[in-house]
Each structure stands twice: as structure tokens, then as C-alpha cells.
Amino acid sequence: MYGKPFKTITQQRQLLESRGMTVSDTAAAERWLSAVGYYRLSGYWYPYRVRRQIVGAPAVIDDDFEPGTTFEQIVELYDFDRKLKLLVLDAIERVEVAMRVHVGHALGQHGAFAHTDPDILSPEFVRVHSPALPPAHAEWLNSDHAAWLKKVNQQQGRSKEEFVKHFSEKYGGPLPVWVVTEILDFGGLSRLYEGLKQRDRDTIAASFNLIDSSGAGHGAALVNWMKNLNFVRNTCAHHSRLWNRNIDVQVAYRHLRAVPDLQHAASSNATKRVYASLALLSYLIEHVDPGSSWAADTARHIQTGLAVMNRSDPEMGCTPGWATEALWT
Image (cartoon, rainbow, N blue to C red; front, side):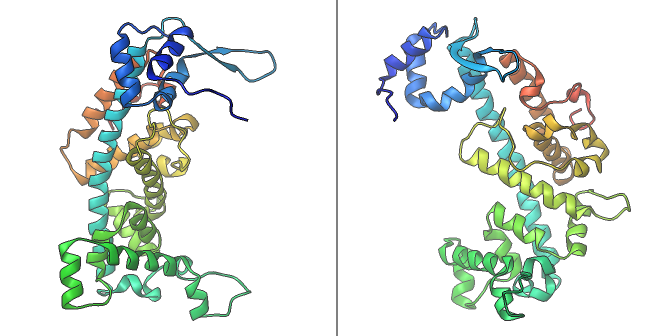
């Protein structure tokens, strides 16, 4: 049973001090605890808790803090992560808008309602392979495509956009694909891109200069990247910690090795943490918005954060010498 008692903001601050954290401005600390919350901040002071190494067993994390840990240091780290998430959302917004245009254009060439036509999309998207189901229509009803279209119809019904209202009043029925792509969320857009036929996926990947060893567009890599960025975007949008987060939907090594500027990020720590995602965002931004200062701004911010943390780069998954890579310079 959970038996911990409720603690006031002052008691929370006193608890941190009793565990060895230095709080030089008690009023400011209590304002932060009141505005941000003890448990949200706890993710930022967790790395500063004492680790006791026991022979033959995993390290034990104590409640006490490492000597020299200050509340101000934790606030700086929290603020660093907050600004990092804003940079990431800025980049993803640019990539997302470009993907909307590319996907709408690629499908639009096949017809205004190509997104509803199973013959235009990949077999994996429009069919399920189960001997328990009869063929054709009943099979499609249980496909990813049918589930995706159902969500699109719900989004169309809920949309407050004037262009959606205008279209519905004038024409009724489903929206053409170049309008649909404007109301999809990032996850829905990512799923539609994955559901394109390979030639269309490869054409879009080539527009980002994402090329495979044969010289064709590397659609498989972009599918993987979109899934990773959707996870990262949701992390940022829900205000979760990003800086040292374990990334559940990781970038595949082989899809990083396909791009010379990203080969240095094809390592376990880089893909497990946020660095690989930041690297591929830098690569995509270079082709979406040439001349953007995003890469330089982000590199500078990461270096500032590492100085604040006063610990090694692997917290973010940064590879040795990352800041000298052409991707950032």
C-alpha cells in the first residue's frame, strides 16, 4: 500500500535540502516547485542522485544527491530541455508541412480521391492476410487502410477549418487528397506515407535527397524516420522530458548509414537517446529550408546544455566529436 503523506511546497523543498541538495534561494525554489511540480522536476534531478555500486549487482540509486548538486542547476537543466523541445517542434513543423505537400502531390497525380482507392496504395496497407476472413471487401474492412480512413472521416467531421467547411457545403462527400493532407495529424500523415506504393514513397524520399545504394529514393528509410519523429513530436507536445529520454521508436542503424552525414549517429547510444533524431532533423531541414540557422542554433544549445549538466555527452546520446560533423557546421 502507498503510505507516503502529502507534503506542502515548503516541505518538499525541505526534503530536497535534507537529501543534500543546495537551495540558495528558498523563495525561488518554492515558486518553481509550485509552478512546475515536484515530480516533473524529479526527472531532472534523478541523474544527480547518488549511485552505489554493488559487486555483481546493478547500481543502487539512493535518495541522497551527489555533493555539489544545487536546485539552480536543476532549474537550468529543466529550462534547457524546455528550449530543446521548442527547437525540435520548430524543425518537425517544417518537415511536416513539406511532407503534407509531397504526399498530397504524389497521390493527387493518381486522382483527387486516390487516398480512398486500394489499387493506388500498397498491398500491405489495404489488405489483411488471414485465412479466417473471406476475400475482397470483408478483408479490406479489417485493413489498416480502412481504419485510417475512418479516422480521416472523424477528423473531417470535427475540423473547424474554413476550407473544410466550404468544401463540405459546396461539394459534400470526402475531401480530395490535397485537402486531406492538411487536416491529418503527424501520426496520420506518417501512416499514409507508409501506405503509399514503393515508387511513390521513393519519389518523396528522393525530394529530401534521401537516396539508397542503387541511386533511387530511400522510401524505407523515410518511413522509419517519420515514425521516430512522430514519437519525438508527441514527447515534446505532451511536455515530457526529452533531453535524456530513452527513445521507444528508434532510428534504424541501416537507415542512418545510408546517408554519409548521418553515419556517425548509427550507434546504440545515439539512437537510444535523442541525438540520432536531432541529427536526422538537421539533415531534413537542410533540404526543406536551405540556409536555415536551425542546425547552428541547435548545436549551440546542446553545447550550452552539456555545460550546464557538467557531465558527459552520452546523456543525450551525442557521439564523440559530434559538434565537428558537417551536419552541424
